[in-house]
Image (cartoon, one colour):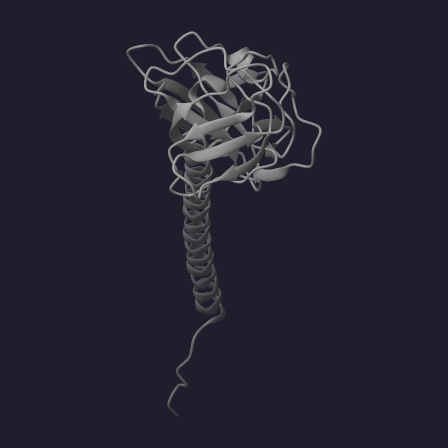
Length: 258
């Protein structure tokens, strides 16, 4: 009789053990590869988030009135420029409330906006006050842009303390603030200017960034006769599912044109 061919029990056990080892190595390889892909995706997402946040802050700061920027704690505040033109005549006398200017390309809104005429001696504090005479007007009640020159009518009479070397006049809106609270960076707007910087303002904010770790750093270098104002901000984003972080640092130059 012919002997039947087959595998012994030892051989089967050895094959099972080898297959288990191969399967374990394969699973670990796939798991590590998947984890690596997830980590790379998370880093790319944080980097993209940082770029978007940085670009949004940069675009807003470039429209800031250069002398209006001030910092306190984890807050940065400024007055946004809505329009600019050249004035032909400023209010004269105690009862004058009209400014004659070159027509705007796009007339800014009235109501909460104000006009600024500033020279080289204007201070930041004076831009948030309501002194008369001063560099900042009371709220603008109306703008007639259909005539030449156009006419800006103020809500009350005002005298400007200084004159611009190039007869420049700017229309600014209500203050804007960026403030950190915990792991969030908030943007505040739509509040009245005050002599002291609110930290933060007492109005409803909008979330600008989340998943922050550490403190957001705002550094401001005032403008001079030879260079523009510079704002530098640094913030760090943390992976919500791990401990990895991404630090973003940006420098913004703001033109100083009195």
